[in-house]
Amino acid sequence: MVYGYVRVSTEKQTVQNQKMEIRRFCKERKLRKVQWVAETVSGTKSPDKRKLGALLKTVGENDIIVCTEISRLGRSMMMIFDVLNKLMTVGVKVYTIKENYELGDNIQSQVLAFAFGLSAQIERDLISERTKMGLERVRREGKRVGREKGQRPGRYKLSGKCAYIRRARAGGRSKLSLARELGVTWNTMNAFCKMKRIR
Image 1 (cartoon, one colour):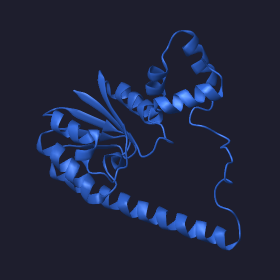
Image 2 (tube, helix red, strand yellow):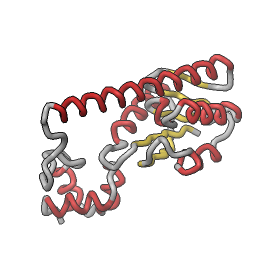
Image 3 (cartoon, one colour):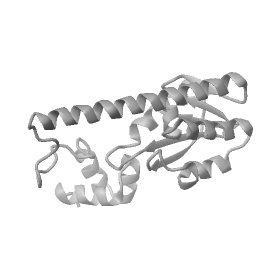
């Protein structure tokens, strides 16, 4: 069985880009009948508190998990390594598109997984530190960070999808099915439809 695992941290993000990358990858590798496991949850949460935990209990020997990058599995080096170790122990392969890794039950894969987990953690820490320093510099210069109170964003999660949603609704599609397809919640879809006066 081939599983496509996609994860975003907040509802402001969408899983659609990750799904497109995985579909393209699977087509190139001739991997068919992808079962999707998608969730909106912080990678800092343990796998047991995510759908990933259920996936770890489901997969078995010769199954394949495909994700866009290894950091989708977790936000810390040790968490990523623990997940990979569990998968490799039962003979599950993990393909990562960004890093172009094929991880299996061998020592080379374990070394690669550990090394990448470490570098990913360092990279996130550096990005976080640079972001904090940048925001602090902007504040010291007296500039405002973020939108004014009450100001509406210029762009929404569903920006650019209005015509598609309107046609789909006219054709009888439910808001729930559209929300799932476009990677947003029903509340987000409902609010967008109200704002754009889509019935």
